[in-house]
Length: 574
Image (cartoon, rainbow, N blue to C red; front, side, top):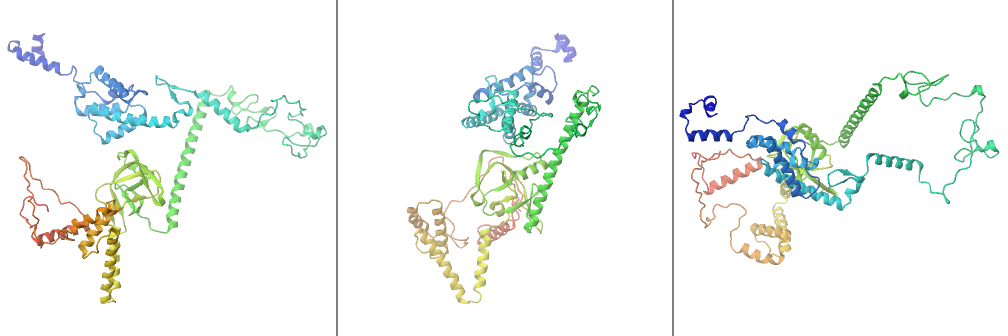
């Protein structure tokens, strides 16, 4: 065998083969797989199609038993060497995740795998254990509320469903329908008795009491109308109960137009006619359902357009991820962006790979008129406001929480501030302009009025914290900060001590002052590590307000001599 291996496998002379080289070649053969083939995803799905998670037991036992079955599949199929590559192992984990039962646990595991790394079977087992623990807690809550007693949906120890069968449920449904149809008549005293025989007429129903000498009444006890009598030759013809018409011989069959039998009992009926009939009825039912669905959608769209036209105002629009435009409402009082579920479903049709993250615990918020709402998921979207002058892009992606109901996208205060829309600053500018305009015709009195209003404001703020009256703008700003701290539950008994600490030294400024002496602190020293390579980053993009502030502040620092401009530096930022 060694001679044949040297001749046909290794292509060397057997005399040139020493012991160490022979051992090395044998170990190489043992370490490699027997057959150099690659397992496919279809083969993985075929081997893993019988994988199931135990329906009962604690979380640890269910996870261990499931992963034991996975290891048995790997050992019996010989995939251990094949799954050493990261891509093959990742595909196998996805196939195993698709076999998890029940389906709600499988969906949550697949959603979590999109955001949490699951490159090994150990990491996958941790994700599975987390979701099973979450499901176990939910089952305990449902059992405490009696949710497992509905319709007899119980399970035995083997995982098989017990309780009432489908036939028993159907019979109960028939009994309920009969109860609703016959009414809730009480049982008469003495039990039910056999009714007395009544005299019947020629056509079957009981005769009216007028025929027996009593007053003529119908079956409801009300007086009956006079009934026209006919001779035998003038009796009106009756419409057949089963059949399209009536002839001299009786009811006709729908299929052969012959009397004496019904369509389902016709001997001339084709064998596949019943199947074709049911298929035709099913197709017609589907067409009717789709027609009603399209009609309802068109009606809803017309209602929305009519509402917009009735309001008479211009609709605001925002573009989500650059593909879908929806109406929005800018709300400066909102802390988070709110996206209705209906808009998210429409966006998912355009972008099926959009990642929606489910919250571990639902977020409870408060809407207008103190109405609570609940958000169970969120999604990160790129927002772009549509204006008459053109689109306005909001930097970065914004987190939007999904709610069940709503007609408009709700833009939060932080989203508006990201593009420089701050309602408080705008109101301050308007107030300043109004104060300046009102003082133009007052000459010196206008300045006195402005100073008086400013002092009254400072006096009110100081009285809130029982602080002395502010002497200048710096002390007024410090008192504003103290009042804000009091609003955030700062102890009122420590306010005086805090005020003494803040005003002990003259170290506070409302803006940078280059004439102040430098701080007596040690300079910051940056020591790069060995092997680090300098990197020149691109200039960060800012909105117009931020860019204007940075330019003015940098110019102020340059004028004061704190920093200096160096265009020759190799690593300066543009």
